[in-house]
Every structure is written in structure tokens, then in C-alpha cells.
Image 1 (cartoon, rainbow, N blue to C red):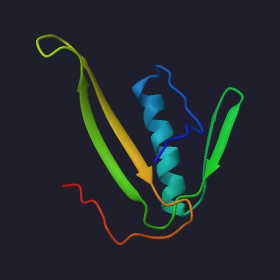
Image 2 (image 1 turned 60 degrees about the horizontal axis):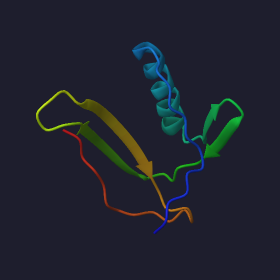
Image 3 (image 1 turned 120 degrees about the vertical axis):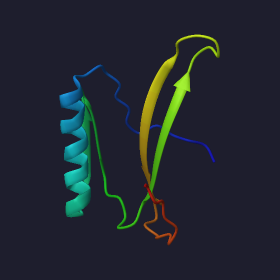
Image 4 (image 1 turned 60 degrees about the vertical axis):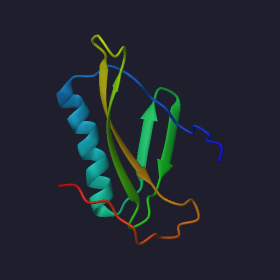
Length: 92
């Protein structure tokens, strides 16, 4: 299935500012409210279903024999038509 990027933002930030952004998303999720993302002249609002799929991934990119770049990615995914899936991810 092809992927269309609706919103994208990438910038260097202090860790405290990243934590604040993640908290804002977490607070919206906990309250069952839509999530609005804005950067420059871009803005989008999404409303995850009650039980979206949650993926956490840690990646290392770079040469096998040298220093690379590490990343932690968080992805929240749900069907656009709002249907629910009973599957789930457990994080220990």
C-alpha cells in the first residue's frame, strides 16, 4: 500500500523540549482528544481510535564497523475508517 506523508517535522531540540512535546501528545491520548501537530505553516489534526496500534522501535544506522546514529521511533497507527483491532502490544 502506498504511503502519503501528510505532515512531517524534523529539528534538533533540547531533551526537555522533546519530553514536553511527547507529554502533550500523551495528555491528548489519555483524554481521548484529537492531536494537533504544527510546524511553520503546516498543521494537521488526527483523532486516534480508542485502541490504536502502538509500535516502538530502536534503530542503528551506519557502518557495521564504526559509529552510527541511533534512533527511537514511536508510531501510533489506526485504520482511517475508525474500525478497531483487538490485537495489542505489551511493553515490559
